[in-house]
Length: 122
Image 1 (cartoon, rainbow, N blue to C red):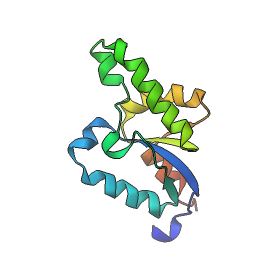
Image 2 (cartoon, one colour; image 1 turned 90 degrees about the vertical axis):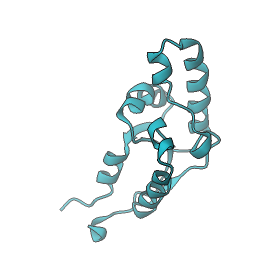
Image 3 (cartoon, rainbow, N blue to C red; image 1 turned 45 degrees about the vertical axis):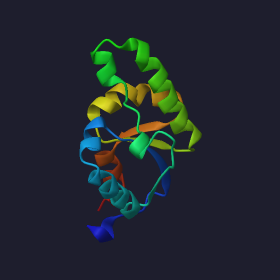
Image 4 (cartoon, helix red, strand yellow; image 1 turned 90 degrees about the horizontal axis):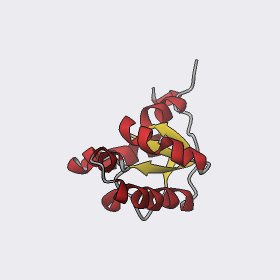
């Protein structure tokens, strides 16, 4: 499979899901995957230890008063970093933010689909 990888050469903003904060070593694993498929994870204010929730959980708890501000900060940070794609590991995060990031010119994609796009088709 290693020989079938075609580096993508793109810059991405990663939306780290809340559940991954409980297993911090997944962040380094994702960085390794991104390197292997030729993807640059953009440095962002609201990534890694400073990750902001996508807002979906807050919305589910009817905390709409917090959702708009958090999502605006998060999406503006994604745009500002110069990414082409916003990569999601959580389908709920993608459902929550996908349309909004697309409206800002960013391509929402699941990490599994991004990896699949780096594998040469025979």
